[in-house]
Image 1 (spheres, rainbow, N blue to C red):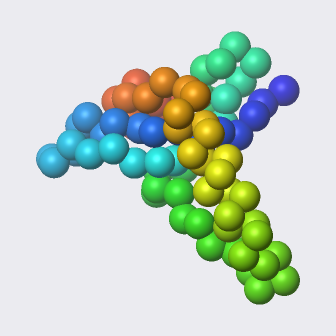
Image 2 (image 1 turned 90 degrees about the horizontal axis):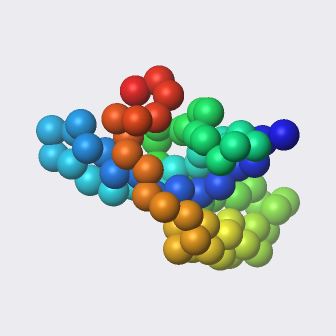
Length: 78
């Protein structure tokens, strides 16, 4: 089974290295198996309401504080 987390990723191979918050799919062993290369975008449809954005931000803050920073150069597809 997999889980999606928001993870801070250090883009260590970029011309100007930077940190970004990304959605990462984690396997049962805690390894990143896929990741969204664009940083997280906190938007919602009008039928979801602003509460969904607030909840996503809370989840992202929790994950960013809880899990270690990943190195972009060590992730699949990079």
